[in-house]
Length: 151
Image 1: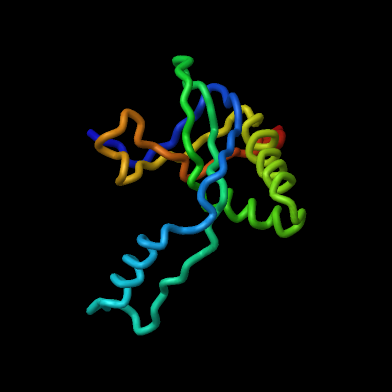
Image 2: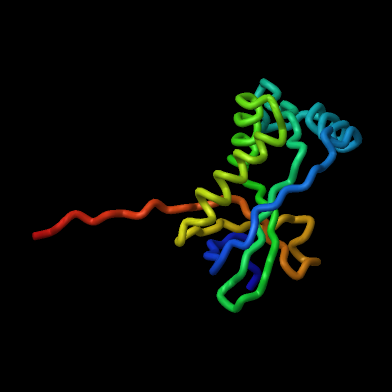
C-alpha cells in the first residue's frame, strides 16, 4: 500500500533550514499553463481563475529525528509559511529579518512544542521514484489543554 497523506510526529526537531531558490517562475512552464488554460474546458466557468502569484524566493525545511533516531530533512510546502514570509517581509522590509521571524515561529514557537505533528503528503514528481517522497504540507502545534477540575 502506498501512502500519499499521513500525520507524523517527529521525536525531535533538530533545525529549521532555508535555502534561496529562483526568484521568478519558469517562463516555459508558465507559457504551457497559460496555453492549456486558454484552450478552454467544456465544464469550466466563464471567468478565467488562473492568476500568477509571486514566487517565494526561499525553500524552508525541518530537519528532525523519528522514533528510531533516523534523521530526515523535509521541505515545508505549507502555504501558511509562504504567507508568513510575505507578511513578515511587508512589516520588516528586510528579507533576513523576515526569515528570522519565520524561523522564530516555526522553530522556537512550533518545533520546541513537545507535541508537534506534521501533515505529510507526496508529490507526483517523487512518488514512485524516491525513497522518501514526502513533503510537509501542514504543521500542527497543538496548544496544551488544561482540563478544569471535575470535582
